[in-house]
Amino acid sequence: MKTMFKVVLFAASLYVAGQANAQTTHKDSTLGHKISKTAKKVGNETSEAAKKVGHKTSEVAAKGAAAVADKKYDGKVAPGGQTVYINDHSQYYYINKKGHRVYLKKSQLVDKP
Image 1 (cartoon, rainbow, N blue to C red):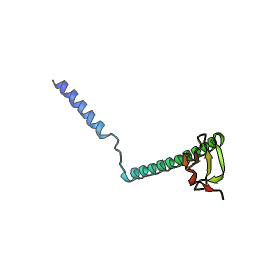
Image 2 (image 1 turned 90 degrees about the vertical axis):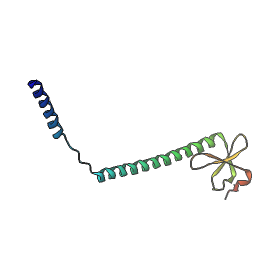
Image 3 (image 1 turned 180 degrees about the vertical axis):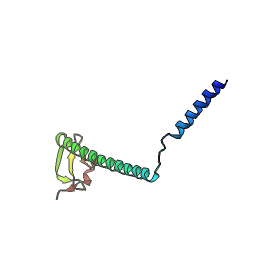
Image 4 (image 1 turned 135 degrees about the vertical axis):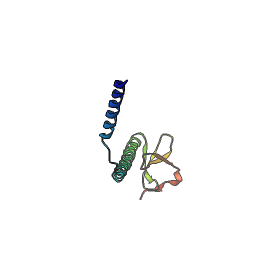
């Protein structure tokens, strides 16, 4: 019984000594907050830049495809001055900054300056 008590007491003292010598971490909330804030800012700026690049790529690709597949309407432009294309179904459209087709009525077309 004495031996078992000694073993348990020895194990408990090792456990307590191990806990006392464990590394303590110093939590500096201001540093963590600054890092988090900076990471979010960089993430947002990267996201915005990626969207801009994606929109421009889409616009260039759509304009290239429209120039090859559809006819250009030479005498008229869209209300914003964009090039107007005519597809196989005689529909008038232009490519916006996001690369989407915006269909127009013939009455919406403006004379080319």
